[in-house]
Length: 409
Image 1 (cartoon, rainbow, N blue to C red):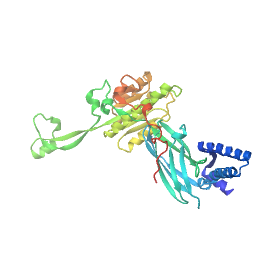
Image 2: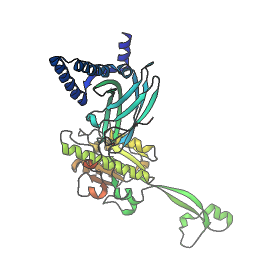
Image 3: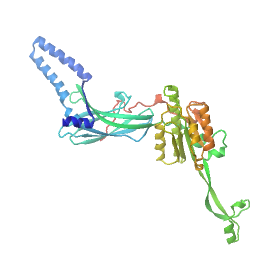
Image 4: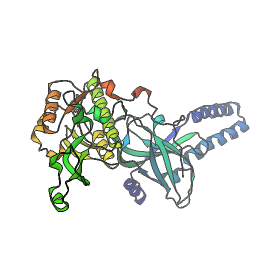
């Protein structure tokens, strides 16, 4: 009873014994040998039949004890990019006192992934009390929250006639962010609306503050307002105080996620919208700009402008968790939310639809944040702004040709 309670607490489940393809052919062969031996009453064939049947028994029994005492800890990244390779790490331990685990295949159980394409690694030998770390490359194509349920251990040792398998429950989740493309224009040009002047949006947002740069003598043509009267009175010579304008590259990325899950075209347009927004965010952050995020849906997301390497995964993670099956109004949220003056900056609104609701949201963003440009997925000007990867030309889920990831201790 204690053994079964330990199995239950570890989430261990036996998946039984199955014949391999070679084992099925071998079984047909030994059955023919057995029938021939009985029919012809040949002792040598009966002896051969006994040896072959014993091989099946040994293959089915040997290795179960070590297989049931394997434990695994899966380490997944906080978030990954759709269509880009990443590493899954597994720490496997043999907790048995004396049995050696030989020729074990580790297979992760991914939802909606064929068995041949799932992450796999091969363990040649694992002694009692020994642990091994396996790094398995993998590629996931779909954005969203991916639940991970279990890890399967499979062994065909020693004769590859039958396959023995156990499953360990290891519940985790993997956050897959939108696929990244290439921004064909710089972020300042992408944020420039047709109605805005070139100077207002091309250089980012100016806070209106002046930074002290030094003092120099007054020159003809200098503005009288810049004269430093207190210092001029002390020195008896007109001097001016030089200042520089503090200009901070700051942008807002707004995303309208209204779509219908029942309409495939609408879902595809949403994915293109999120990929284009993620590409804009990453490009702007790489150029040292601050980027804020506004996104409707459940829940509403409003993140103030931020910069730096640590801010990028936070923004991409929010895009990876977006669910678009709703008709939540982005304009209504913009009207209700208080917007500080220091947040004002050019804005880019990405939307899967070109309708009155999108234009209303753009108008609200222009009044609250600054000049806003609307980029609609599959619109005539969409391809001129961003180039997205083609899902049909991406690599298969497992980078290895034989469908089995490389293992590294």
